[in-house]
Image 1: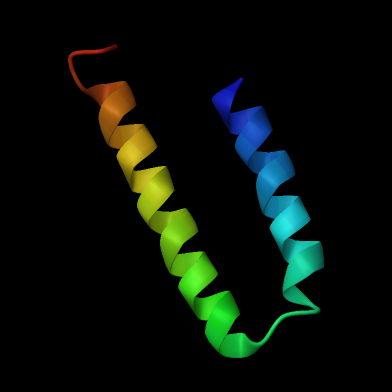
Image 2 (image 1 turned 30 degrees about the horizontal axis):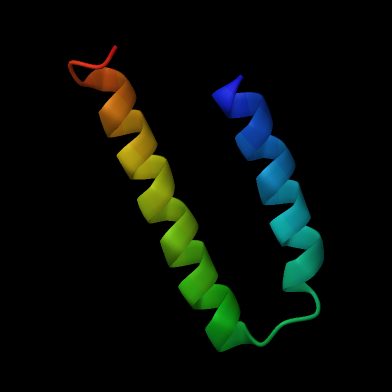
Length: 48
């Protein structure tokens, strides 16, 4: 479920990315990567 949601979210970001500035896009990508890392770390953690 998480993966399906994130795929939809990333595709939405892809569409949005064409209309935003490169600097904003870079920050957004960094935030998405950080969120993905936190999610995967949480999934692998004791809450699993």
